[in-house]
Length: 56
Image: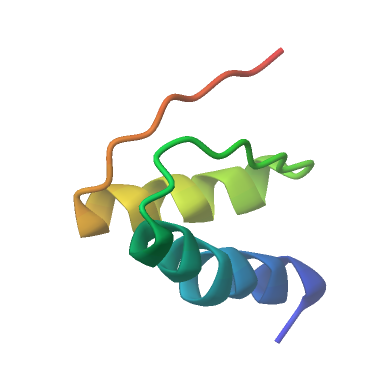
């Protein structure tokens, strides 16, 4: 598993589930790599999670 894959895995499998269980509705996630951003965007889309995307 590469560093970028582990970063995406961490957000999708550890950070996000904890936030959704706690009822937290707003979280800022900084993603320095465009490829990681695409992976997370696709994950959120697959899961039906509404997100706001801000870039440059």
